[in-house]
Structures are given as structure tokens and as C-alpha cells.
Image (cartoon, rainbow, N blue to C red; front, top):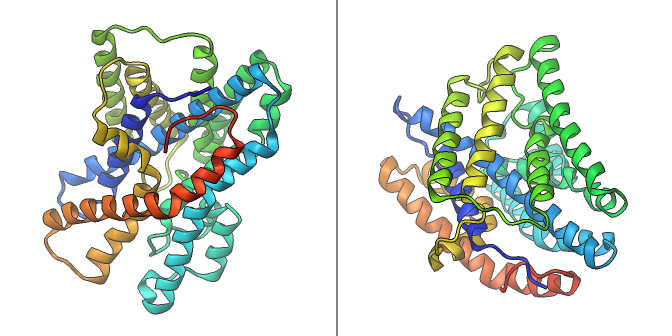
Amino acid sequence: MRFYRPELDALRLFAFLCVFSAHVPIEARWAKPIRDVGTFGMPVFFVLSAYLIVSLLLREKEIQRVDIKAFAMRRVLRIWPLYFLVIGLCYVLGRVWHDAGVPGRAVAAFSLLAGNWYILRFGWLGSPVNPLWSISVEEQFYVGIPLVSRVASERTLRNIFIATILLSYLVLYWLGRVTPTPQVWTNSFVQFQFFGAGGLIALFLFRRKLYLSRALRIILVVVGVLLWVVAQRCNIISFEPLDASTLIPGYLSVLLGTAALFLGVLGQNARVPKVVVYLGKISYGLYAFHDLVFWTVFDRLHYQHKGLGTLFVLAATIGIAATSYEFFEKPILRFKNRFETIQTRTL
């Protein structure tokens, strides 16, 4: 049995391009809103990931019992090799060039899949290992999902995902009202709301098809972008302590905007170009390597032309990610396929 949707690759590519734009080192005043809105590409990854994982677990449960060991092997083989490769590269670079240094305790935190908590405690690193904080959050969320999916009914799962979203806003209230903090973006409990939303969408669409008119899809996408702009105006990507009256509507705008964008694209019948499908397929590598290429071009080589440099970074990132996929990831993915009950794509 195969579960594959080409529009998911389009969403993966869209999410990567958003995150990529958030890291473009253009200092002009007009660029800041674009970078801030681009940051919201990360919740797209989280919603998409939860939707896909929960959908697969529900289908696996329908045809047999959820195999927790097989799930763990699939996650380990898909995520860990590239994750630890990039951590290792950043650590080695830091030994040669100190401006890319990754402290030993940071390596330990990222290796234990707690990199986001390290950043919360000590701040962002001056290293291209920073984007991997999101992998820590993902793996934390998926620790219990297969077991819960195995023993819980669909109704219980729905209630768990709703509770997850509510918990996120209780945490935001606490962080904004009781203990104001300048950094909440990498907090696991804040980001879990997007996994909750993806899980709810997966549950709602299980055994159903999403039929939306083209006009409604366009409306959803436009509304989603506008809600992201509202969130950007709330300045939730800030290094200043924010009140709950700002955090809660800001993050709610991100959540609703991301869900609207996701539903506007999910299940659409338009043909997805092969190049988009391929770039979506290698999007994990694109995400994992892009900041390393940014650092090399602008920090190490001190390239001054930001526009041409950014285009070069994008092209180089695609080349490196494609090479990684073909020669490093694909052999591991072939082995991973042995643990699949439901195939998601062809290699």
C-alpha cells in the first residue's frame, strides 16, 4: 500500500523557501518583514510532518497493529544520519574556525535531541548548526505518538491533539504574563501546537477526501498569508520580552494562517512539476545544509554582494542536498523501506 501526495512536496519546498528567506543577510529595512514572515515556514514543516506521520499510523493501525519498533527505525534512519552528519561538520568547522564554534555542551544537547532547549537557555549559537533545533522539537513530539496511536481511539487522539494546542497557549500565557522571557520561539511546548493541528487535520481527513473549489483554495492561501502578516506585526519573532496579550494573538495568527495555507494546497488536483517534486523530496537536505552554505559564503568568504551571494547560496544548497540525497541518504532510505508497512514514495 502506498500513501503519497505530490502536493506535499510542493508544501515542503514552499516551507524551505520561507525559512531560506528568513536567513537571507540583507539588512535593508524592507527585508525584515520578509524575514520575519519567512520564519513561519517552520510551522508548515511541523503541520505537514504531523499530518503525514499520524495519517500513516492510522492507516497502519487499520490494516495491522502499529509496530512501534518499526516506527522508531523509520524515524532514526530518515532523520538521524543527516542530522548527526551536519552536527559533526559544524563541530569540525568550529575546531578550525572559531567563529563557527559549537561548544561541547551544545553538541551534547543537540546529540540528545534537546538543541532547542539549549538555545532557550544560552541563546542562538554563532554556528550553522542553529536550524537543527527544529529536529529536536520534532523528535521530542514523536517519542509518544506511536504508542498513543496504537492504544488510543480516534476520539481520544483528537482530544489529545486539542489538549496539545491548549497547552501551547497556557505556556504562552505563562511566558508572557507570569515569567516574561525574550525567547519563546524554540520552546517545545509552544511549537507543539502545530503538531497538534497537523494531527487534527489527519484525523479529520482519515477515510475522507478534501473537496474544495479552486476559488476557496485561493481564498485559504490568501487568508493564510494575511494571518502571517498579522503575526509579523505582533513581532513575536523578537528578542524582547512580550506580554501574553501580544504572544497569544500572534501565535494564534501563525497557527490559523498555517492551517489555512496547508488546507488550501492539500488535495489539489493541479499537476505538480517534476522539479518541484524533486526539490520537495530533497527538502530535508536543503534545510539541513542551507545555513552552512550561508555561513561559508558570507561569514567565511566575506562575499559582499548580498543579492548574487544569496542566489549562489540557493544554487549551491540545491547541489549539495541533491548530492547528499543520491549518495548518502538514498542507500539508507532503501534499508529504511524494509520497516515500512505503507510506502510513502519511490526513491
